[in-house]
Image (cartoon, rainbow, N blue to C red):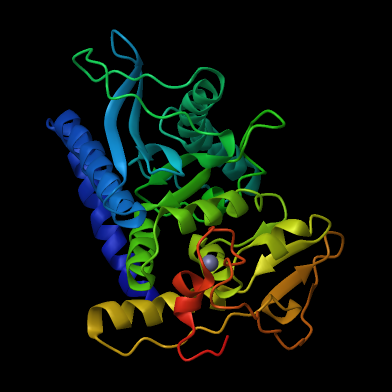
Length: 336
Ligand SMILES: [Zn+2]
């Protein structure tokens, strides 16, 4: 990962896109861009949730094409309301104050994360209050979506670009009512990496549900600018509950967490042997603990305590799957 090389490629893409947007085929290009992302998102969720998952794309809440939703996808135990946002992030100015105003405006704009959240929250609330009937673009009734408990449903926004901390840590910018759930905002490249990982481990929607139910609780006190750090913490610590529990502390995840995805990538695409991932409780050494008053990071070296679970017991990650078929798959040759 050579930073400047990636920056060069992004620069070419960005300039190319600018030229298309200013050209006479701008509208066609934008439509195609949105549809391409929507297709990619639907296909990736199918890889994660498994082939028994069902999905409805481009459905409407009401007749007459009112309130469109990009994707509703579900299995027997989890339901996702997914909006895709293909627009790129507005570049901030150098002046921090102007910069913040610009970032906030972009966050709340028609193509921003706030809008995607509001859209998916609408349908989430509807499901909770009334159960769900949706229509396709011809006004035909889509097959009924089974009623879900609100804990089984999630608002999801998939972006094409990487929005960094604007997406991973939502509490500073997102407006929402107390009691409404945080959404999960993820970019398509991370989502594809999750799909690769889930395929490697033989996981499905049950692990995704466990991950999301804990992940959306971390928007106020656990910071990273890379969504993969949170996913890696879920994998290595058998869930995120140790972090979600500790609301009084503010943590920054160690950027080294995401390194396990390089291993998984090399295993999947370059045939390298799959390395054992040891399951431990998070130690303070793996988390940089920040004091909100003086902003100094303190790092203490506490040995990581291994997580011991019987192979036939339920996995502590909350997936309701036996350990041996869930996180137990990561530790080869481990004794129960
Ligand atoms: Zn598990």
